[in-house]
Length: 181
Ligand code: 5GP
Ligand code: MG
Image 1: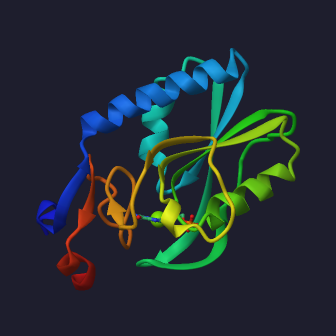
Image 2 (image 1 turned 45 degrees about the vertical axis):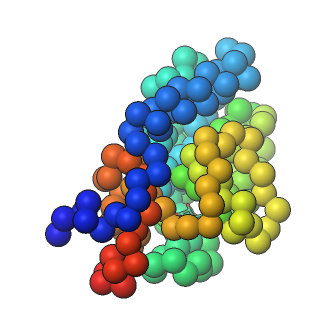
């Protein structure tokens, strides 16, 4: 299957994303002011964003992953399921929680609540994309690379039915591609 023919429009090129991520990393580095940070990346959607972002952050950071599922089939949101929890102790640590996108707000809000119970020193959130039109629960991320409109985006880690994560850009799927999967 040719992935590119499934894309209606490219919204963010690899270069756009790289430049924006560098700016975000600079802001994070300044705000943490030399403190140690535990980066927690929510799998799977944020794995590419996280790996690019952290290479621009000059802080003594450690990294951990939590794997949750919310959009399990296509675009239908379901209950949050924790497939893999943390493998490190975040008690008394500064935590920066990273996700690919906030839509309804359920995922980030629930993961933040779960991690808050482990008594971190601080907990902030960072997302590549914010979709304000989708919000169902109150949730504001501390760091946002881009606000996006009310459309379903794929690429650069974001999937549709587990596909398209490896696209180097972020774009919108054609209607035909959504129905044929
Ligand atoms: P929320 O819990 O905020 O509704 O949704 C968060 C999760 O839904 C994201 O981590 C992502 O997996 C998925 N999601 C929401 N909007 C989009 C979108 O436009 N494209 C893709 N690929 N996933 C999305
Ligand atoms: Mg997803």
